[in-house]
Amino acid sequence: MGTTVLGSHGAGASSSCDHERLRTLAPAGGYDDKTGLEPLSRVDLLGTLILRSKRVEELSPLAVLPLEHLTLDGCHDSSSRDAIDLAPLERIPTLRTVGYRRFARVRGAEHPVLTAFDNARVIQSLEELGVALAFER
Figure 1 (spheres, rainbow, N blue to C red):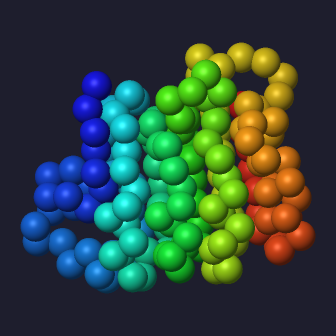
Figure 2: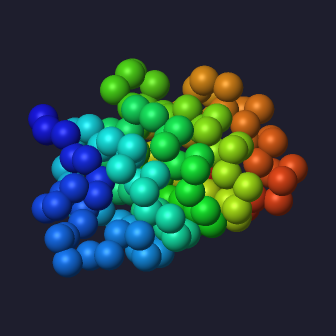
């Protein structure tokens, strides 16, 4: 199990990449790699972020970005909830769409993110702000 720090050379961005002008990012990485989002706070124009099969503990670093589209495809935290706290998304005024697909090993009728943390309230708040939300099983 390793740690992927987005924006580091060789782990999400290359030395030839002008990260200040990056608009879309879909980093590679492994399922159990902890993915730190802190370096993304320096990517001033990032509008689309696609995270696939990442262990993400904290979405707070995204709150300073002009994100419009966020995809959390099979992302999870290290707890047994298999969900991420969505509260920091309320602080992104530019956010227009959020897609969250649970990973295949999680079974059941309800998406786990809907009942974890205070996400039900956050989801309602985002809907009221006009954010399009998709929670896929």
